[in-house]
Image (cartoon, rainbow, N blue to C red):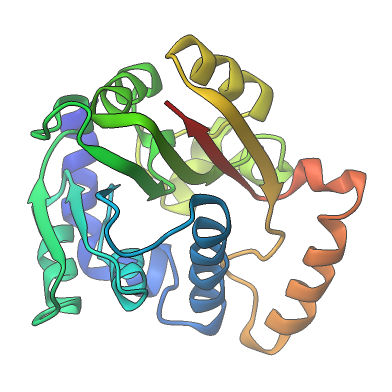
Length: 239
């Protein structure tokens, strides 16, 4: 499984920002901004914390976190992705990139205040990843992730129907989460004070002319029962 994911992301690295994650378009920038704001709100981000970003990809979130004055370790399975990430923050201080499988992090146990990532857990063996994250966190340390919500109709079809999954450009083994099931998995792996929030109706391929309107509508829907079918889940939990 892991070798297949590595090969896939090595192959798509060059088109990742403009294609799969549209980081170079207004909708992509707004989606990054929203997730960084959630990390700030729920994780008390401040200089001095020991932070690990797993699945940093091409470094878009790494770059945003550095702008907050944070220092961090950032890891990914793909050499090609990390090479792009290094170029984005070239000359920047406060970050160390390294290639690693999340199942076997070369990090001392109980040494980190926070482990975070965007759209990474759904590529992994979740139990193995959470056990390793638990190992490296200090007591009272937190994890924080944004992940796809399986209750979103589009995401459900994209993850469950093979030809749609391939058409969407998904990696071979990725999935999505239902929040109550994920809460059980977090509890099983020792985490407490678990908070999982559905959010985000702003689809990555929203046309630039509609981004503001769709974003406003999405923020309203997040205050209604329809929030359960939002596109993403924001997850935090404590060791």
